[in-house]
Length: 396
Image 1 (cartoon, helix red, strand yellow):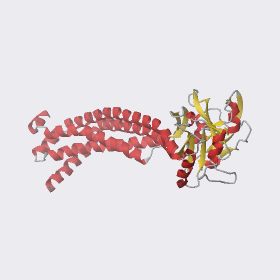
Image 2: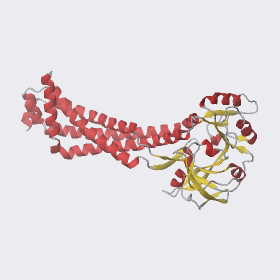
Image 3: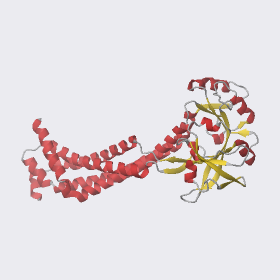
């Protein structure tokens, strides 16, 4: 057993020390694997960024109320009387203003994207005064809050970053009128940073919505108060509503786009991975062919087939690991924190987010690289072990 292990170390050390002699093919394989890993992590970090944005939007003690049967705010509709009844439900927290409930209106306007100049569907949200207290991480970072009753808007920093014409002092056209931008806010990376906010009482007549809303956001006294709150609303014959925890709602909102991007990213990674596997195969077959005399000599001296297989696999896995590290590092430098916008398929509006290259993604990328190295080195390793000693010696 000790002799077998010593053979593994001896052959593996010889294999790794000979890598500089094959630096061209080795560098090509390493670069190919690094490219695959970087692209895979980059695409999947989009899905992780969107998921993180949705998760950051949900408060532990917050709930949202939609019309029964609605899956999103765009499909919902509530009368003003409904929103007053909801705000009086038990379990809702209170502050100096009153019940912590905000009846809100959600519409879409077109604004040009900074990067391309093409129009995008940007969410415009009409809110009540309690809205800023319901979003726990809400903070004005520039300018001031809009005044109630005036055609003034504040914009999320994500929206300002991605869409043109949202600087303080600029104006946006809404319902054939120009509304000035007076402030910029953040919500700790939440979905609201993709939106533009205005007083709901101003937005209603602008879009001829009368006394109607689409949702009611509430803050509960505690997380455990949700069941009492929900039972009160669903048992009230005056209402036809669907209360949901915010976390549940945002999870459902992110499912479609998350699955689509993850599926697309995985497909791209597999296709590129196949190319990287062929590259690794070519590299390792070349390495085996170039070392055929050394391998044959070792076999003639009594070295077993097992150490030869392990040495070739180790070389392949080492190249794959280095390629994976390089690709992961490039992905982290290029994509982590990079801001972009995509379409939220549930609301058909733009959502801004930051790419999230987290530790889990980096580990997945390196694991995928090692898998490529394992497959790419396995068959050349078997070929090296089965190489007839006399034939290999005659080749060179």
